[in-house]
Length: 436
Ligand code: ASP
Ligand code: MG
Image 1 (cartoon, helix red, strand yellow):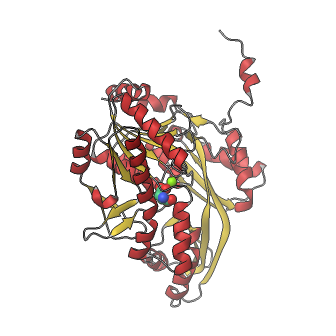
Image 2 (image 1 turned 180 degrees about the vertical axis):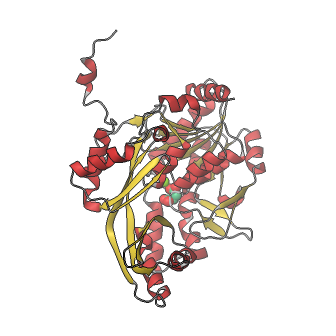
Image 3 (image 1 turned 60 degrees about the vertical axis):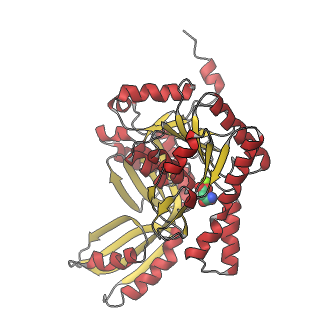
């Protein structure tokens, strides 16, 4: 099965196999009339190879931000149904334009909005979850030899309300459609040419990975490597949709995201990448009584307010009280502090403290499973750079630390080098190696 799958993947990437593909083009790729024309040309080349295509597009780059600002200018607490009505419109423009571009080139194409597919979601406006995609309409259009162009980022509730899937949600749309129509591959075209060992803007010598596992990618994405929306990777892993990230501006094979099979584990380096996130805040409740229910009393109301908690640290001190510390997304910080200020009034003697100037840095790699000592190696690198670690958390394939935000670049660069992830210095280094 794996061999067959591998063969198919190889065939698709070389274009020898007439495949059913979902191709997703992000905001930068459809950022102007010229770029939409270039996407249309690329789609026509894929069609010429015999592939059947469903294409998902984002709004033009900057457009969703513009719509968000517009809404907030009109109503600073904009949210809910009518907010989604506004911010879903960017994608309506790009699907229509792309369909027109294809038709102009003599290619049959039809644009669909979320509700026309339909992509059914729950009612969580602004971060709706896809519940079901009825694939009949898509299959019917494919059978008519049309290129089906679907608006990313949007869905529809049971009662016909327009919803949006959260920022960057077009990736999730693409993967969910790929799962629903059982596509051979879901290809995410973006302005980077693949997944890197870390953000090349922070580490110049970051390397492109040809392959990464769903699990690793999930960690990389959730930790702030903004290549793919995290929910899209979860979805792809759950439904085993082969996912490929590639550039809209050149023809490279990009990075393939697949299952962690044994073969790839053997070749796997210890660490596949370093992820980081500045989007963090830390809250500490001091003097929490060491009694059953205390953690729940703190985090219950946070959960009820729909705030996601990430790392949690608690330790009992000598005086039988604990400091309870946890991290959340920075955008939720003020809300979380408010929630706690009112929910903790009855917990006597506690003190609330928080800070927004932290960041999280993580080593990620399935190779870690079979090796001990990675954590201490990591802590040594940080000690050598005199960087103080505020929090630590680990899983089978990841070690995360929280540090002061001002040390982010330093920490990531030092770790990247220490774990052997740096790309060769320059071409002369390679050129000097005598060829066999
Ligand atoms: N246009 C939406 C956003 O900017 C969705 C996406 O780009 O994936 O968040
Ligand atoms: Mg995007």
